Length: 520
Image (cartoon, rainbow, N blue to C red; front, side, top):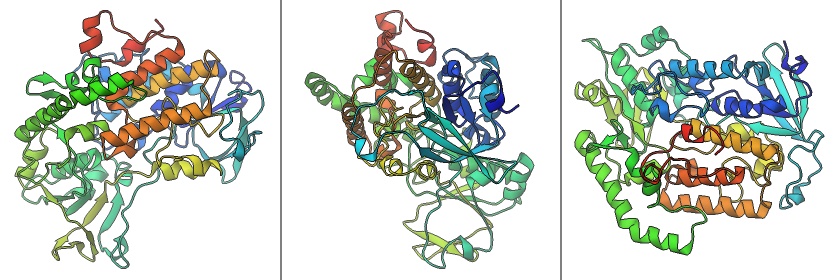
């Protein structure tokens, strides 16, 4: 039954775009508003459904990736769950809280239109009611059954379409040196993720494969390529490494649990945070040698444990910069053993392009290839801008070049709209869970937003702080001040930000979603 015609979902005032992790968390917290969730595909799960390989696994433990009110059934299992297990978990969550009744599957939002009273010149005026009692946004939806679009009106929109999937990033090439002249097969990893195990193996087996990229998706893809090319007929998979990033084999460093270095209150005390006092800034400055020493301590272990120097894969930037930009990846267990066997090779050219038979490098040498796969990420900003109207499209990255999101949720210059899943953290599900609770409290008028000017000032401080922490600040990651961020959300909601049972746990144990299960 069409949710808009379902008698249990009468007069929806709120629309949620996307039924991934953030969309599901938001639907659960806003269920008392009977929201409509528009999902472009035929399934929940977002990137876990549409951008995962057969071998894709979670990068953290189950207990670090769960909803506060729905723990994993085997949350103490130390193995990393597969993408299939995560989808099962998300389906169980949606079933437990009866969320499916809100979701319109195969309903792609192609455009949104602002019909409220606010004018572009009013951007710095304070917000009015977030639920004004009349439509503010119109949403154009195209279903799989129809080429035409249907328009629906809402008082508030929550954008949960995320930064990944849909629109791939492809490098640009000089004229007559792009993929069009290559006689082999070229695809992006989003295309590869749509293949089943048999088709993926057929694509890679016995082929000279080139993978462009060295982040988690590229590393996993190289492992699948190596596994498909076992035996005497197997070929080498070559990775073109553009930007090096630190990888870790597991969450232990010289026998110490990794969370001690970045995920406790005491460890985050070493790092700058927004709105800190002058004395706090002085303390951060005085403790900066210790922060540097921790980064070097971790780097020393990684260089000892992994053959990074042997393969020219040791980054020049500090480990802290990758952690602060949420780019630390877990290295598959047998990755370098496959490299030692010659199944995985690495190239680090300054420039490269296609020729008919493969890849040519700026040094003049050529690499033959049958298949080239771009593991080069996605253009989430382009995806978002494709549906947003002016003048708001131009304001998405105003004024800093990064989308300013107050409490990682509200854009100060875009009225009656929230964004979840655009600010990264070490545990994105936890962030979505807590932010959706904050949004529900906001819409329930349990607290009010500051002035638009104050929100812009706050977001500007956060982004400037990120710039000082990592060169990769545009990823908009809050990992090194995540506990402080959660504290501010708790204070807004009237919760006690100190969630542990005693001061020792408060200082030295990591925070998880379970700490925010209910109001205290």
